[in-house]
Amino acid sequence: MAISKEEVNRVANLSKLSFDDSELEMFTKQMGNIIEMVEELENVDTTGVAFTSSVAAEITVLREDVVIQGETRDELMKNVPESKDGFIKVPAIMDNGEAGA
Image 1 (tube, helix red, strand yellow):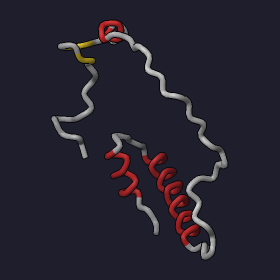
Image 2 (image 1 turned 60 degrees about the horizontal axis):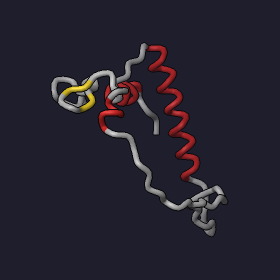
Image 3 (image 1 turned 180 degrees about the horizontal axis):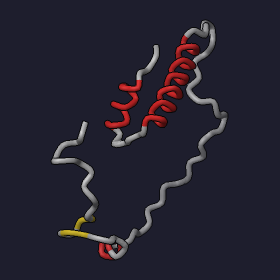
């Protein structure tokens, strides 16, 4: 399955990214190569191969959960560059009230 420049451009727009023509050409080729590799992996016969949920043989060592006193809200808000009505004020990420999708 090949991927078109239009598809790469659509995903870029959804991600709020923009590319010039040479970048779009490069990313289209790279995405096409990735898709080809995945398609090649789909053809591998895995009959009789046990399911692997983790490739690391490490065991997670858990520690006892100890409750400690945290910082006060006022102490934490000292590090906030801008706040409004007791909340952290951040830049808007949506255009015209929509997610831009």
